[in-house]
Image 1 (tube, rainbow, N blue to C red):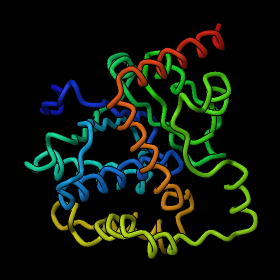
Image 2 (image 1 turned 90 degrees about the vertical axis):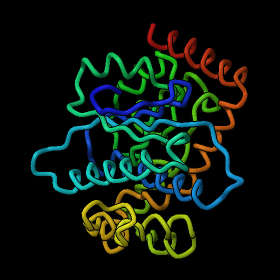
Image 3 (image 1 turned 30 degrees about the vertical axis):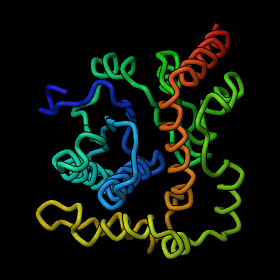
Length: 265
């Protein structure tokens, strides 16, 4: 990653989320998972994982302050994990500046995992999913947008589907019943990473991420980041397990590629 001045392990899993920065696209869920991995590597000496490089590419609207705070959080987490001797060989975080077509032409073919993790019911369609899949990336995502048609064609067993379905999200919006603080209080992993937003652990220059913290707890997590967190962690563990069995991974890639090719044809 020349423009970022980073050296990355080319044998690591290239996990890529490149799309416009918006709360419903849930780059936040991705970065909270990275924070969880960092904590686990630091605290659990028995924990092992295939090295993983998390690559973000996104632009935010000029006046979208919340999105800019997410970008700042990604950079702060990257600064922490990329320079920690205990974690830098297992996880790396890269934010691609000025994401554009010329960068997409390089990063899409290089991706091993495609992050398509928008809150179900929010993504209108999206063809980037298909571009990643046609270039060999395994998809982790919700049943939303183009993921729905892709899962029908390639089989859910060849994707890593997780989280709420559209009808469940719409029921929560219509009838209530979701209390984000319950997930915060009952899941130590969630409580730890959410607290780290405001206790200075991942902050540069003592700049806490109160706005993000409040969006999850005070404003009751409108995009269900905490609700889907555990399922997202589980899906990533399945990806790691798949990469430990090359034949299983190759079969998934071949099956989904052929099915999607026939679909697009």
